Image 1 (cartoon, rainbow, N blue to C red):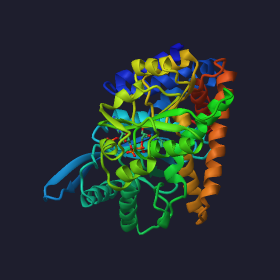
Image 2 (cartoon, rainbow, N blue to C red):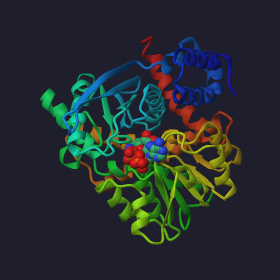
Image 3 (cartoon, rainbow, N blue to C red):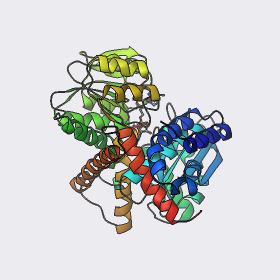
Image 4 (spheres, rainbow, N blue to C red):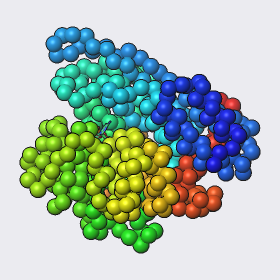
Length: 446
Ligand code: NDP
């Protein structure tokens, strides 16, 4: 469903930014679901909201030179896209992965605007990253890279301007190095990053937040269908931050997680994945998931990460990366009896896969709603930093849980109000958009 205004804006974006496939995909999905809102609120077109909301307020692209362990100079490309500040300081992660380019960072930054709006906290949207691959690098190389990255980034961020966090390839180690460099350059102890270590301003439960939040969201979808995680077989793609804690929470609610993956392949363990082994391999030893099958005899490793979707399961939690689950994988999941998909990753399902889930009327939670727990808890970290206080794990987890319940309710109600009951893609896009659009209109043409 699309109207002329939406089509015109999408066409302009495609002409202006040729080759940015992921950005076109994210923008088209959001704008298409806004058609009924635009028909109802004429002011949106008059105020040029779609043209403005799709164009980042600011994009910073910079050189990141660093010296590797052999003494050779390496150069990467860093960027920060400050997308929209209508609701608060720009907020969104930093990704270090060889695939990083403007299309990927723009799609992530664009999604972040609506996700952050859904949390109910005062946060604008942004995203950043570099085409740097931390895999296989020594700690010293990663430190030198992070320091060089921050030596440019520091002048564009501040606790009330732009507060980055982690994402793929950026965990506690990288955040620590970037925080240290910021503090050294500016001589200010500000909460300019979230996902910090607990000793220097991090929030309890931030590490767990995205994965836990995704499961809390899924639990709400299941409750609406008089179901739960109890005794369900769950497949979780990825074995990074989001995947590990999604698996942990699903298990604590009585589910059995039978498969996890990384970019090289997946492990299947009918007895249930031993999460302590995955955590040690991934968080401590930084090894490949294939090592799991060498240690745990009941498990099998298979090459190729997309094969994970052929494993019959009740619930799928895609938590690795964008477009990891295509139409064929979606059809296989449905055929094998999958009743719920909640996205821990950003845009892991292709548009064709999303259509399969919506047509099958299974419980489907899109990433911008289902994985909003990470940024929500980053918002809670910012609040604690401003107060110079630390809340307990239970306090943060309780707030996170309530936020996820609210996001589900908000998306569900918006879907109903705009005549697509049960369609949480439309619901999340519409509810997230309306708040930002109203704030933008209130701020005048800026
Ligand atoms: P991590 O770097 O901790 O883990 C990423 C995982 O995904 C790894 O297992 C990695 O495998 C796998 N992966 C990465 N790229 C690919 C690829 N091209 N194909 C297959 N697998 C891949 O990242 P996070 O867990 O933080 O992020 C995962 C997803 O969740 C991303 O989409 C991110 O944007 C999203 N997200 C993260 C949030 C957070 O708080 N961290 C918040 C909200 C969303 P390998 O090690 O082999 O590369």
